[in-house]
Amino acid sequence: MNENKSKIGLLDRIRLGLAANTKVKFGTITAVIILVAFILFVGINLVFKILDVTVGMDIDMTTQKLYSIDPTAKEFLQSLDKEVTITVIQEESGFDVRTVQALNNYDVISPNITYQYVNLELNPSYANFLKNEDLKDSSIIVQCGNRYRIVDESEMFYTGTGAKILGLRIDQKLCSAINYVTSDEVSYLAVISGHGEQVTNELNEICGTTNKTVVTVSLLTDNLPEDTDTVIISEPTVDYTPAEIKKLEDYMLKGQKTIVVFMDAQVGELPVLEEYLSEWGLNLQNDIVVDTDHYWGGNETYLLAGYDKATTVGKSALEENLNLAIPLARSIEIDSSDNNLSNCTQFAIIKSFGSAYSKAINGDLSDTVKSIGKEPGDKEGTFILGAGSTKLFSKVEGQNIESTLIVYGSAAMLSDSMLTSSVLGNRTVVLDSLLYHSQKLDMMNIPIVAIKDYSINIDSASANIVRIVLMYAIPLIILVYGGYIWISRKKR
Image 1 (spheres, one colour):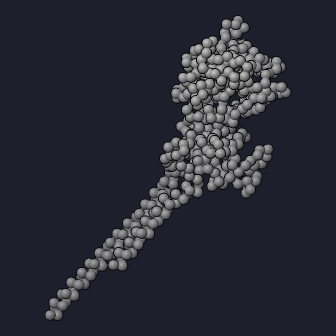
Image 2 (cartoon, rainbow, N blue to C red):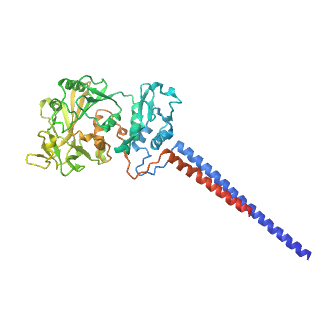
Image 3 (cartoon, rainbow, N blue to C red):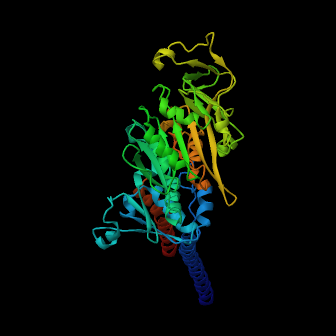
């Protein structure tokens, strides 16, 4: 009897011992799993943090790639061989997340680019070399050696009505500034004033991307700076004087110079200026070209036009099959028959389609366009809407001394909407014209990234919340829940 009780007691002790060993076993396994999971979590985060700093691990899932660097900009930055510092006059949290991401991208892509955030209240000595500059909290200073350019963050965005952001030009503006400060070339682009000229905001932006110092010059009182290599005459409403034309002639005699003229059909004839254009074999007609088959925005005088394949102006836009919008355009006739023009080589840049016709302007343009239907006497066919003429002045030691005059029969082609449109090549044509005798870099023509209505913008604070939730909160919840399960099993 006692022996049987003893056997039963021994079996119970063995059973209890096995149960205890099982609890210890499973408890140990659970603890090991939690420990391994924690080590993996910390290790993976550490590895990805290192990769993010060294090669960049952000993934841009937006449709328009709003947080990605333009391929042309990336190629330009990778070829950079000078050290550039980008200084932001504000805390990182105060800047748009897209601008911050661009700076991160640049720092990762090029070992020669560094960026920093400087608080002028805490570091007033930083701005000593910028005493004459109007710095704002949104200023971005791009510097290489003693050369610098200041870009305001607002310039990074193309805005429409009500300051709504319609597009991003971050790569366009930053790469242009970097190109400027790292260039050894010092040249000027002169915008002529004094005749009611109009310079649109976007034309002014394009001038700023040419790697030239932009100056405004009144030929009535001033001379063109010595190192000027490009002159813009945009939509003059008052005729030039012979003395002003003489200054332009003397400027072109130096060679490798360019004058780009945009004329407005609504102004009427400007005899002195147009006579100067004719001396280059470019005769501006007193008409307006209409095309009822190829037009833009529901207006037959807002022509859709094509490129002349014989010129390099607009070549990249032609390769991308981008349209041209040339509103309210006067036609241009090329004349090479005069013996005095034997040293000129004229070329077409923009042409209308064959379905176009021209109507002579009699008096006010508004009276002419009241009836735009084709009438007897209207000229038909393909019309030149933009043309150039290169004049050879002399040859020195085998080198040609020549300059180029480019004329467009439309000033309305410079509207902000047309120069920023992603489906038009107007911007490319204008930029190529301004850089006709200069080294043309592809990065100068980085397009604006259009923002569609369905895009989602996340500010810095929201992005930080998402990061905290994904990288810290969720893993911590998993660890706490795993610990709870382990303790519950241990108490059984």
